[in-house]
Image (cartoon, rainbow, N blue to C red; front, side, top):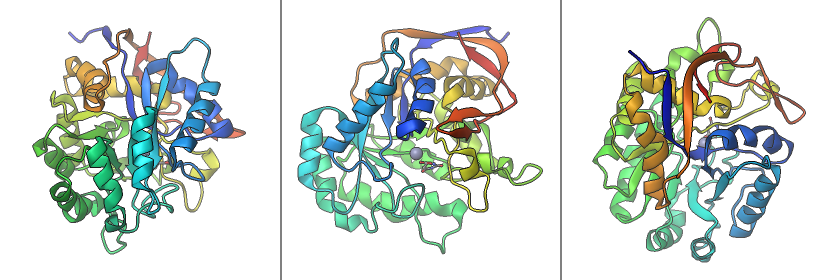
Length: 345
Ligand code: DOR
Ligand code: ZN
């Protein structure tokens, strides 16, 4: 018999895009309703590259929150080739910045200011290793000669393996992993190397991008992979291994920015994140493993206390709206117009 209720410690989202301005106001309550904390990505236009900018952004997020929430945004810096070791020291001293995000230049949304050559940021990585500030990695090569489905695997071989050798003490998170190779790399690494896994990569394989026609709302980066990889991710997430923790990579875009000749990458899941994860864990017969993945492993990795309060999920299918308000337009959430098996009580 499958359970009708599931009570777990309140989860955290260790990888989230909240955007800014009116868009921020449209989405932040979805996350705050479920999660106690979230690691907030810095890929705004312009990117969040300094502690002062991160603190301003944090204040703008707090100003948009509903009155009754205790939600805490955990800020990150966007790593550029102009980032200085001094900025890392300021980040560590300040307390509001919890990590630094590495985007290979050109890899994804607002990554133009990212890193062209890792060798150009070695002094910064050395400072991060010294200060214990985690490096969050968008782990894909941008080499156009590499097939888009192989870009994560190539990143591991070309960049991650050498980086681990050069900075063995550097805390790192391979974000939104999508492949068996990533699972194996992280599983074999020491405890200060972790990985986030999204709900959409647990629930969908690459067929979802082409189901009956092209599906822009299933396009994200790293792109969905074949079924064998999805199964490896499910195994990793539900296996109880503390290397792996919840990070939605919920990435809202306006409908017209996705339904166009060159659509943006990103899937919006914040409206139903923990419910979607519950579905994935239930399908694997591992609902009892959801709490550790969603509420314990990430907090432990970041050296933060586990949340004291609890949430209840009910098995109560509900229909996701066709569209959600997003700034002056709409955003199409994952499962739009379809049902989700679990609901947050
Ligand atoms: O699908 C994605 N969307 N992947 C990313 O790496 C960035 C994100 C975004 O900001 O839209
Ligand atoms: Zn992301």
